Amino acid sequence: MAEWFRDLYQQFTFNFIEGDRWKWIVQGLGETLLITFFAVLLGIALGVVVAFIRSTYDKNAPALKARGGPGRWLLGLVNFLCNVYLTVIRGTPVVVQLLIMYFIIFATSNNGTLVAVLAFGINSGAYVAEIFRGGILSIDNGQFEAGRSQGLSYLQTMAYIIIPQMFKIVLPTLCNEFIVLLKETSVAGYVGIMDLTKAGDLIRGRTFSAFMPLIAVALIYLAIVMLFTWLIRKLEGRLRGSDH
Image (cartoon, rainbow, N blue to C red; front, side):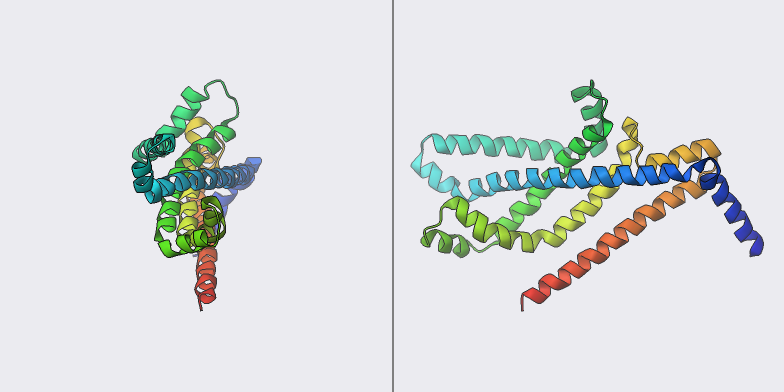
């Protein structure tokens, strides 16, 4: 047993301490968290807009169809574009979207982190939009009618009555989507970004030892996900408690 621990310590020293290669792990972790954070913000922003448009169309399409006019066609066009966005993003792999963003759309850009944020944020926004839309449609229509009967406009009713209730319903699911996004950023190394997975792979390439650096990367991801999962459970407990 003592010999096993000695070999493990030697492997740890060889992979991380020599040449200060542990700094690559720290740098990669920081890059991963940075990309995830801003991609989450972009995903929420896109998700709110798309969900608002699609739920508005679902709720008002019959009335607009009966009324006619340019409002119906404009809302229908915007809803169609949102559907195209959702279909394309959810129907193609995120790594392909990242490669297209980096090598085609932003081929002249030298800021790989920004491209990754845009790629992952746009991808996440499609899933967040459907989460939000489901939450909005799950609110009883009587809540909306009550707001309108009090003299609130459509936007005010959504902002003050529907959206707050929607967030409470979808927050646990939304947090799980962010955990998925964190793990999806592990493909950022395909475009040369020094993320956590890329850092482990670089160490493997220098030391020709795959076990230690890749297991270390996996354990770091696992620790972050376990922390997020614990926070989500605490949040769900608080939300359940506030219902009583």
